[in-house]
Image 1: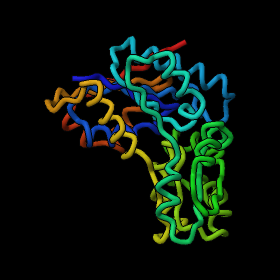
Image 2: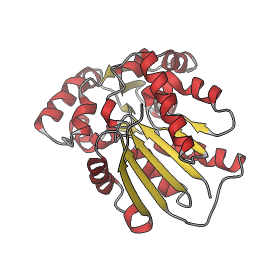
Image 3: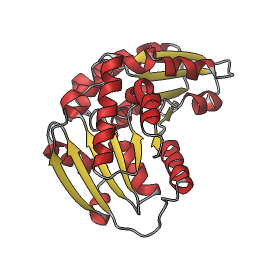
Length: 267
């Protein structure tokens, strides 16, 4: 079986881990939340790139044979460098699901809620330049959302007020499709749905990311069907808090897997 490493700036990548456990449950998983340094979306590009590479090296030392960079900002700033430094293992990144969004949009008006660093990155600009579409894209940096999510304030009045502020321009433009460009944001999907209404389609890319992981596992002859079912959860801040979030998001994993947790310091 393969050991697959998943890292994010905090708890957001649990949305990707949840999908990985659904599609490829027969592997060991190590999840690393760099919550001591969240959010990444407001840090310098060089810092994000260097930190992401350090975390990937740590995961490989822990025995990971494939990596998911479950953070849009880290993917935008570091994925090319990580792949260059680690050519022997599959490294799967994540990016805002703009391609499926522009395909699905009926009125050609698509909203993109992402981190500040993702929206200003060269990778995001290249993604836009590579699209052949006539859609109007309304982009918005979700400043302040990640700290609220990390604190567990998923449906607080403060979170709802901030979300309404961030989504107001998109609603004014009458978008019919909304891209969640940060793995943290699916935690807010019920609140987002309350604000934008049932007619707006919400795009989350976790499913596509894990499908790509499975393709790479097969390519590298790592795809397995027997279920060893061990998950190790690590946090650079508070493993107990990470465990609480994991139990809320993926309760079925705790019925099917052995789960270990630990707080770690990674310099």
